[in-house]
Amino acid sequence: MFRIVRFWRRLGHARFRFVSRLKLATVFAGLLAFVFLALPSPALSGVRRAVVSRGGTRSTRSAAGDLWPTFGHDPAHSGVSSDTSVTASAAPGLTEGWSASLGANAQSSPAIAHRTNLAETLVYDVTTTGVVSAFNATSGAPVWQQSVGAVYGSSPAVYKGTLYVGTMSGTLEALDADTGAVQCTFTVPVIPPATSPGRLISSPVVGNVDGTGPTVFIGDAGIQPAGDPDDIVNGGHFWAITGVGNTAGGCQEKWMYDAWPNKGNGDQTGVWDEPALARNSLGSWEVVFGTANPDRSVYALNAASGSLLWRFQTQYKGRDEDVGAGPTIGLPGTNGFADGVDYIDGKDGIEYALDLLTGKNLTTGKPIWQYTLGDGTRKSNAVSEAALSGNTLVVCYGTTIYAFNAATGAVIWQATAGARVQASPAVSGPPGNQVVFVGDISGTEYGFNLDTGAQVFAALTSGKLQASAVVAGGVLYFSNGHTLYTYGPS
Image (tube, rainbow, N blue to C red; front, side, top):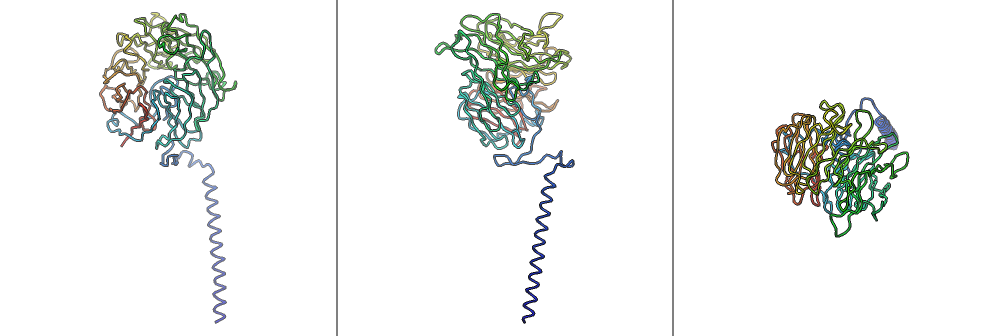
């Protein structure tokens, strides 16, 4: 009996040693597998890996081009999404997804960008009370909020991990796009006869125009005394400000331009619209924007130096003749134009196609083409920026949506919204199956087939819809009232 017990004890020790060695081998193999998977592999380098978003849902990384980081999608303000998955044929099937409360009214267009580590895509929006919010693009879960001061309608621009937005108190705020922390602030200098900084109503555009790093371009509309809504004390200005990461340091004045021929009395010239940025046919960067009454002109400046390249004055048809809509740029070589084209409309009710290099046709001294959209009365409030997709230019004026041949100015089709349109159009989808989204002040977001003008989508919300929609990652985003909405495939 003793021998049997001793035999089982020896067998038990042997089993223990075997199991222990087996466990050790298993752990060692696991460590080897971990190290192997952690190392970069040519076979795995192109694989799209699923990541867990902050909101708890699973998503895959989208390509960087699928996002919408600035007003108008890109510095040239094409208004066209790089994401082609939301199409005209798919638009009737779009259904409401998540929505998020912004806490206050929002008139700015959302921006969409990756976190710095690419692990999450964020949607940014700004309220008129100056609260900047970031949400997970997949789930709508809040990620961060930051208060910057009252914002009228300046849309955020995200560039290399920094979010820029202008405020009514005359400050350009630079926030960490991942966390919302303030990185730096630029305050517009007080220029007599003003007693406070001018209001930054314009949306910023950002680019590296001289090799020193980011430069932010934005205009101010001067100041407005309380109780006198039509009298602006000083003329506005246009600013080039160093961005975060610039070799000169962030949030420093680079140059300022305000050489308006007529700064006016009472109503003073300022900059309300969002500037566009592009490289011209000579290889230099130029920034294009419009001014308010009485100057009512389109300007192109050398983006590196601030020197004037050209000026084009719109027609005078009444007191409120601002160039309130931003420019849309057809890059050099597009649609047969070697110099490129600047498309812009003023409150004179005219859509202009201007030579990007000279501001006019060298043969005639006039615009390449122009089209009268309406009578130019104040009620039309032309502040909607155009979108350019291939040879089709989409322009909104009053309650009408126009599609033009971008080369000739010929009307391709017209469609009608239920109320006045102030938002700018956004185009998505592949050529031949594109949809253009635009909202009106009755609260309806529309979708039209870009080729035919047929309505293919409508979503009714409450309140005035003044913010422009964006499309990224297969989803339509727009804000109205206190809410950020999303629509996607069911």
